Length: 261
Image (tube, rainbow, N blue to C red; front, side, top):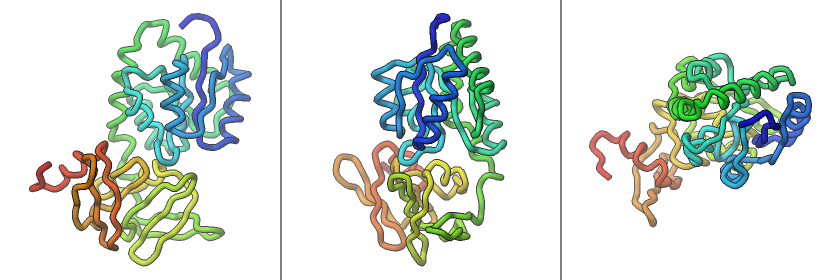
């Protein structure tokens, strides 16, 4: 990476946030925006095709969040990443621990300029392998799932109302575009939000990802049933069958002490 303008890929599911990032990059240069992505899947394809110098990557996106983008591309094949997050200081501590650049919304041009300066400094020092190792470590960082972040009661917007839900009443949550379908023991709710942000508030001992778009409460899983192509179906307490994809199959099955593959 030379003194030429950094080639930046902007990834955020909100159009306003993408536009703001592009505008700020004009003042944070030298930088050139080579692409804008609305979701994680677009980001994976763009990273592979465009090979940007740096990715400005939103953490909380529906269906495929920022961490899943890294998993899909591979930590050792990822360009330098500057995470963009609305997480509180508990989560930020995890980014600092693993020495990954991050921006907390709302950020300004000077803070973005400093993040890009750090990217250049790391590239100049030839520590790409070390950065890849930090990204790998970050994917499993316990600091992103601090117990203090897990909540027994959650506040979710349903229409014009703010509803209070007990976490243990939630059976499963499914991403649907920019919305979440939240199934409780009594009803199904539609709430605007991202799956990653919701998962960050739930106890990882009980809430587990079974698909890129689905989280289930393990307390309400009744059985697993083999399906086609190596997939499984997860039968929930309300009788709903949800797809367990091959990506998450082993980690879910291992939660059953006596289960085999």
